Amino acid sequence: MFRRRAPKRGIDLLAVTGAVTRFRRRRRWRGAAVAALLGMAALGVSSLVSPSPRLVWNASASAPIGLYWVEPNMPIRRGDLVLATLP
Image 1 (spheres, rainbow, N blue to C red):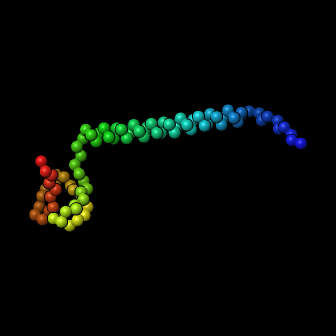
Image 2 (image 1 turned 45 degrees about the vertical axis):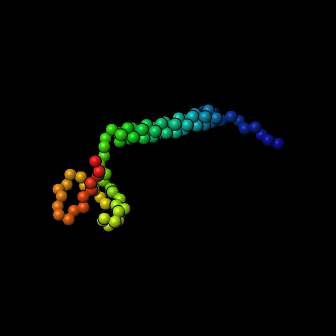
Image 3 (image 1 turned 30 degrees about the vertical axis):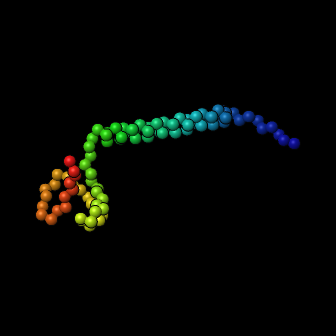
């Protein structure tokens, strides 16, 4: 019928497999925790700093409709489009 195999010497496969599974679970949990902390830190920094817009979508008919790149603190010349916000 069936022969029983002799136990392998050295490494207990169940113990190693269990340790590897626990290690992977911990690593996955740590990765999720680090990602959550980085996301909260990014939200915190963005709430403290007032970033100026860099890309602006113009949907009005006053200028060609499209996406415009804004460079703050640049000298204004004749013919330039200017972005202004209401007070």
